[in-house]
Length: 159
Image (cartoon, rainbow, N blue to C red; front, top):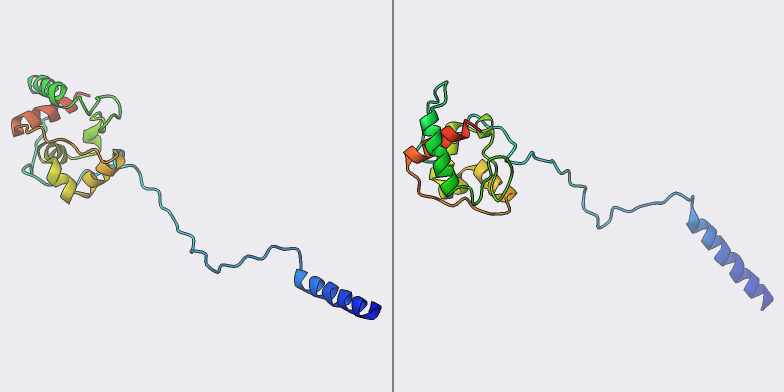
């Protein structure tokens, strides 16, 4: 009996030592997904795109070198009446701030977004990205005229 017990102890000890290997941790890739490389995109509100004119009725806008102060004043009135529920001139709110918008977007894109937000979100990648960035809050169509949208654009130039 003592011999059998000694024999069993020797077998178990040798098995334990042979399975231990070195002390380095060995990992198996079985069942693990390959690492996914996540590329951080710049937020849509910060992205610069000065070639995209958007989707809508506005295909060309000419901005004079000097701001039309009468048009900008009218645009400020329209903006304060129709837009400030979601947009603040100086900071991000429900929607993006219009300050510096013409450094990031074409005048045509801005006016098409004002006049045609539903179609812009459907057909313009940047508008879709903005919708996602701003928690799925779509821009409401305020049914402005082209003249009112142009006045708002002129006001944006003063910010």
